[in-house]
Amino acid sequence: MTRKSAPGEAQYKRPDASMSLLINIMDHSLDEGYAEATARRAVRGEGGAISRAPGTRLLVAVGVSLIAVVVTMAAMQVRATAPQAEKERRDLVNRIHTREAEADRLQDEVESLRDQVDAMQDRNLTPEEVKRAELLATTTGADPVEGPGVKVVVDNAEQDAGKDDPNADPRQQAESLANGRVYDRDLQQVVNGLWAAGAEAIAINGQRLTALSAIRAAGAAILVDNRPLSPPYTALAIGDAKAMRDAFERGPGGVYLRHIGGKYGIRSTIGTEKKIKLPAAIGITLRVAQPEGAPPTGGTPIAPPPAPGTTAPAPRPGPSGTPGTGTVSPSESPNPGSGDIGTKAPTSSTTPGGAATPTKSGRPTRTPTGGNPATSGRGKPKTDNAAARDDAPTHEEGQA
Amino acid sequence: MIAVLGLALGVVVGFFARPVIPHELEPYLPIAVVAALDAVFGGVRALLDGIFDDKVFVVSFLSNVVVAALIVFLGDKLGVGAQLSTGVVVVLGIRIFSNAAAIRRHVFRA
Image (cartoon, rainbow over the protein chains, first blue to last red):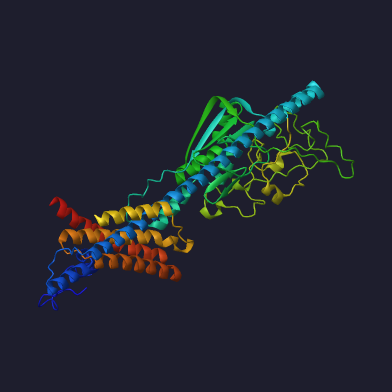
């Protein structure tokens, strides 16, 4: 590895000295042993030609065969492991398909059972009760609904601002990025505004909202009933389309949207739709409660689905005020998010613990004022545990 | 001629004997392949340069494989096996490329 140094090279610093390693590798790519062996042969007078002695050729053969063995072994190894990986992948895919089929089958079962329940209900209930059950099913989200309504689309602010400016303060950029995002509380405001405007049923991105739905944030994602949504957020509300749109735009929801649109660039559109189809809420469970000390009666299989405990949101035309005597009903958490329109601190978008936070957006604003649901006059006992509800925010009753 | 026979023999042995590579040696196989390729290209280039030497060829191949495996082994023990493997592959890769370029110049005069 000795470099033949030209005279005077000691003082002269090569301009590419920093690349000497690379140059060394490139220049000495051929094993120097060959040159040295040739030089030795030249000294011994054998000349530079390849020697033809049989022993020599045997040695070459041995070397070549060794190399061949190594390369072949490697090839075999690769061939042996590739099917293994392929097999594992296929197994995984098969498992996924199996589970998917299973889930589909269970979904079918759920639907057929639901039909059975409906049929039994129709057989066992008086016409008035059937009517009431249907109404409750609609209001609790147990049944899909369709009708005219309002469509509110909320999306993050466009992120072009300042992107091209190389001198922009990255911290400020991050802040504006965070401010331009739709938060859970923004959606809560929209949903509350829609309820206040007279919506009878609401779904966000296909997630039907029930009285117990939670809209909350987990990191940057917004969860509705623990299912993550991605922007743009489309809230569909069924009701008297035109009146509802006007009421929403005039009401707190519209005011809020305009405010965050002006201040943070949150994009939103409000429009009416002739026909909206909302799916049934998923994960509705029937909950029955008895007065203390009473014998267990609620467990009968064909219990009228609108069990006394239902928290059916009393729609305007509905039998408001009748339900909820002596029953356990989930408390409606107030809607503290209605204040503080001006401060949109990014840090508060997460809601630790979940209790008594603005994350419960169930149906808190039934009153036209859109204010505190505690004033809605339902007077239900607030016996449900907020923390427990946070664990399972999707439970709902009123299987119809 | 005998070299070609050796090549065929090696392939046959590697293919049919299916030597089971001990599990501990498995990580060194790729490195050994790269070292072997380096020796092959060096040998061919030396052949075309007219300075081929059988002893140098075999010894360089064996030492390449052993040293490369040793470096990777040491690296594994020290927790920098991946980096050292990369280093070995880079150095041998550059050598393979420049030797292949020299061979190409010999063969195609371009």
